[in-house]
Length: 212
Figure 1 (cartoon, one colour):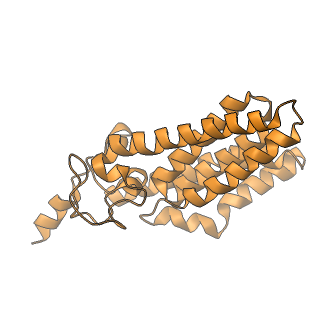
Figure 2: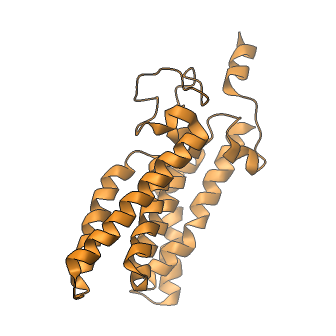
C-alpha cells in the first residue's frame, strides 16, 4: 500500500546516508572504524522514523550531505561553495521548516571560513559566498515549493501552520499535511515526486470518500 511505499522510501533515504557518514568519519578515523560508525549511526534509534509517515529520514539524509560538503568542498570557489550549501538548505526547507535554524549556523560558518582562509579580501569573500548561499536557498526552497505545492509551497511553514486556506493549483487544504512538507513525505498520491518512483496511489480524499 501507500504507507508501505513511503516506508520503503524512508529506508532508502536512511541507507543512502551511510556513505556520507562514512566519508565524514574518515576525516578523523580509519576505514574499518568509519564503516562501523556509519552503520551504527543508521541502525540506532533514529531509524524508527522510517516506519512513520514523517519526513525525518529525508531530512537526515540531506543533513549528512550538507555536513559532508561543508567540510569537503572547501577547495571550491566561494560562489560555488555558497551556492551548493544554499541549494541543500533550500531542499531541507522543503522537508522541514527547521532548516531555517540550521541556515543561521551555515551563514555563520561561511563568514568564519572566509576570514580563516586569510585571503586578501576576506570581507568580499564572505559577502560573495553569503549572497550565493541566500540566492540558491531561496530559489530551491520557493521554486520547487511552488512547482510541487502551488501557492502553499510559497509559505515557509506550509498550510499546516498557516491559514489553512485552499492552495490555488496546488494541494487541497482538506489534507492537513498539504504544503512543502508533503513534498518529502508524499502525503498525496498526485505528487509528481512519488509518481516518478512508481509509487502511485489514489489521493487521500478518495480514500476518505470510500470510508463514508
